Length: 481
Image (cartoon, rainbow, N blue to C red; front, side, top):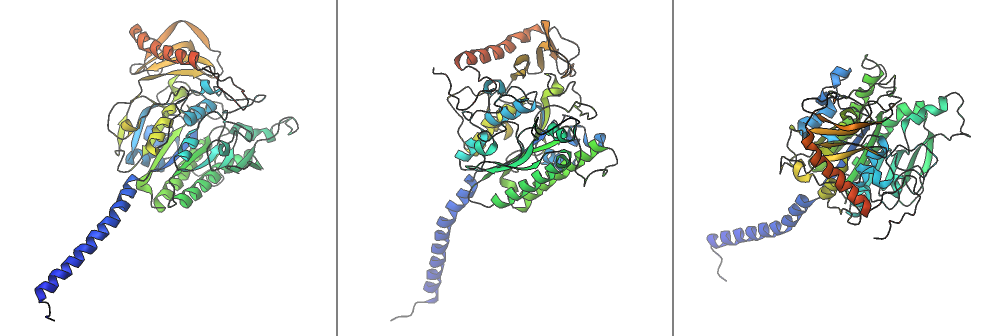
């Protein structure tokens, strides 16, 4: 048999190499596509009563006694919103974030004070349920305030696991209050639970636990991110910190750290906790495929001796003033959302449902009025305009104002949460560019037209889909159409 020449052998060798590379390309191409198509992880950090002007990137930080570099890094590495709005109280804002519906629709328009079946009915679809159905692992850590008992806790509403408090932090003061007895009013407990199981009480939530809880929320959130970062599912971590809600008291490790008082110490603690969460994302190697959001549930803390800061705006939570509804909002998604982008376009917390559903490939319910608008194109820079121009502002069950572009129309006057709402003889209109503190009404009556369209659309939807009364028990069935 004739021996092959060197040139023939070389050709055969290169053919073999080419075949190998071709085979490798066929194997790697689907893998590369799978990576490109992978759904992003989502870390949603929600603070409690953090005013617009508290953190450095919104004019606070050092001016409030403590720098907030870790939180501010999200503004440098992502997008900063100057006109993010929430509802006026804890429960309604958390409800609209969860359901994509104005809280008044869901019977959650006010903070519950006992005596009724509080929280969301099981008929509501939460963003936890939507993302879980879309293949996400879901964890909730922190304050819930959307139901106090089994059936209405986070592990009953779409989250695989949870830890936190079912209601609110001012209850931490009960055990040390004169005359209080657990026989009269049972103490709130920290709790934990898993999907398909009953939640269990852990510790009485008193002033000692109040100082410790955000460290525990952070610890469990970090562990969850670390555990699920390289799993077979994308993860959704909802981190609901309890600061700076009254009593605004820092963790013992931060007490006295700034030398500028407990409020500044609390800001330093919050910044460090957010830093731990950001570090966990980085250490897990999922930074580029993780959406991180930082925001607040409503405007600034108000009850003395604690005093939040709303920046240039007047008012605080429980009011329709800008200080009650406008909050910091930062979002980072490397390679998807441009760094250091800033916008004053109107967005509302209710929009988080449709936006996160779009990002995560989840379904939006089609059998009920949804107030959530998909802002994903706006967030990703495909357009410079928000999908929203305005929204109604409810204080409890009252339609108190409407915001449209840079104007606000108030049907009622209420300067603080303790003032009785008084109906204006004539609705007052404010131009927020010229008068950010809403002190001098303008004669721009032409804006009544587009504002009343917002009111009319809401009222028409209520005729078709009646509101769920507060305190409605499960099971709830919507009226037949």
